[in-house]
Image 1 (tube, rainbow, N blue to C red):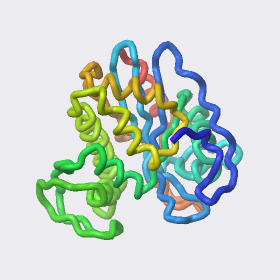
Image 2: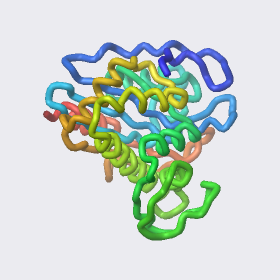
Image 3: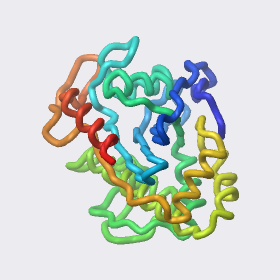
Image 4: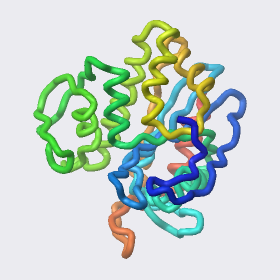
Length: 271
């Protein structure tokens, strides 16, 4: 599980992750869903920042839409998720710092197979969701409309689907929904003594630089009920971007950077 973010899926070397140490009990962690599938340089299918204030016990999650058009150090203007393909977690950290002035302390990367395994570990009885309409395109299965219990691979299809009029916006909404429900599943363990076993089972499926002791402390706050309700945000904000197409990059979300940067700062700093 422990890692320094140096290696790509194909074994090539990325720059070592240089996240700063947490400040004043506040932690920012990148949660990345990697669409690896054997490609040499995979991009991130999902990019979230998990923020936790260990003093106030306030958890927050921020979804950063992967098609935001931003400056990537050394690569010019690109889609945000290209930063991971170019330079792994460290370049993505630098990109977020340069554009939004947010310090990232840790990262965790989970690929598709790992996501399914983790879901089945945390929620062996499945997760109940309401599928708004039939989903099939691009996810390798068919999910039918209606409220139902989904297990690992099915839930992966649910959070990956984007071939409707909501596109990536619907996918980001479902990703946040599932993260919150998984947090509730961990909270339902009702015993801190179950945490080490849970982390042990999840270990092979997560690439992270967060040490086991820190994970234990975070999980303990969830299980003991000390953690408050999760607040969430999505960037870009509604009305703060335009859909554009650029040669060599494709369709992007051309954002009002100042407006989104300010919103992110206010959201994370609000106690």
